[in-house]
Image 1: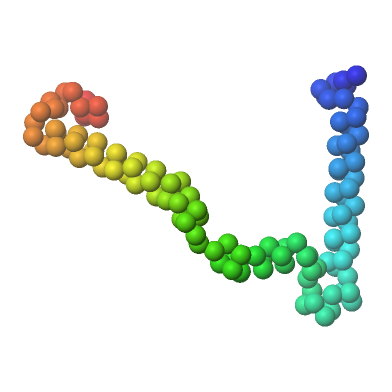
Image 2: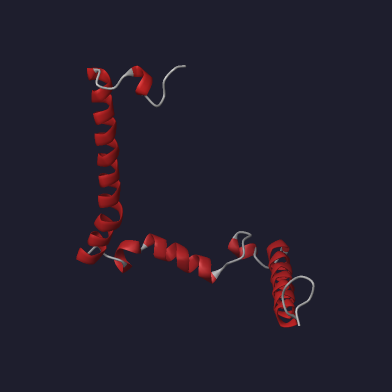
Length: 116
């Protein structure tokens, strides 16, 4: 049965459990962070294995993810070709419009951004 907030009692219990778990972890982190004696050897920070793994992967990216034909093809197809084609499209349309205006083929009254 849904309550007045639009979700069931089970969903409400799950949300409350998540809030309680987050508060408990935050309290434990703050306890470890502010303990003056525990981390004297670690220069005053809490060591987190997941963050250390992420930093290590960032440093050794080339070792674990080397360039090969597949990664280069992905970069070219997803970044270089769309950006290059969009840039060429903008350049060609603007050049065409500029040429029409300078040659006098487009009257001043027909321009989209005219003064009064």
